[in-house]
Image (cartoon, rainbow, N blue to C red; front, side):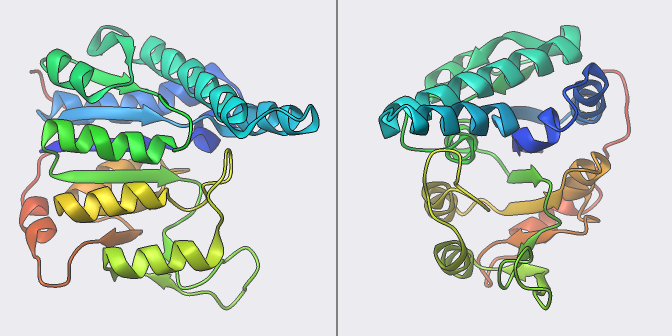
Length: 245
């Protein structure tokens, strides 16, 4: 399977420890060793939000704020590359053309590129570049809810929704701004819908959920057209056990 993973910076930077990067690198390496094609896009996390907050106080432009967030994603990408070792291409990938030209025997790791969008959108662009079977969004949230679970105790997690339903939920609960793209970037949703690529939202605080997103045994939310059974077909008999390539 060809997979584009949007790895939330909140997961990587929560404790700012080498062990955290190793935990996610281990899971990603196992997918790669099982024969999957893997592209990972790292978010900026807490450092990005801190830099953006300071820039706002300094009256920095929105473009400047986004640029600071992009730099934070590159730091996380480099640290993940270090944790992956020889399994990863040593460069940070930012453009679809780079992904296409370097796609081969190693894991590709990317970060942000242009102001005005998040790494979720970059992951969707990379998904298009590799003709991905699946986009995985791993964050510190268990899935997609009918309303914001942080402010609504009665919010219900949804198992399967359409791209249109996801877009409505995002519009109702988040605002799209530097460091505040919330659940997912709207541009990423629209591109995934255009491509027809399923998105799986998982609670990445348990790295094993990233593997479960491929097997279909995850506890998150799957986003796909109702009339499509593509994701269910892809998840049948997927082998993610570590083996030599």
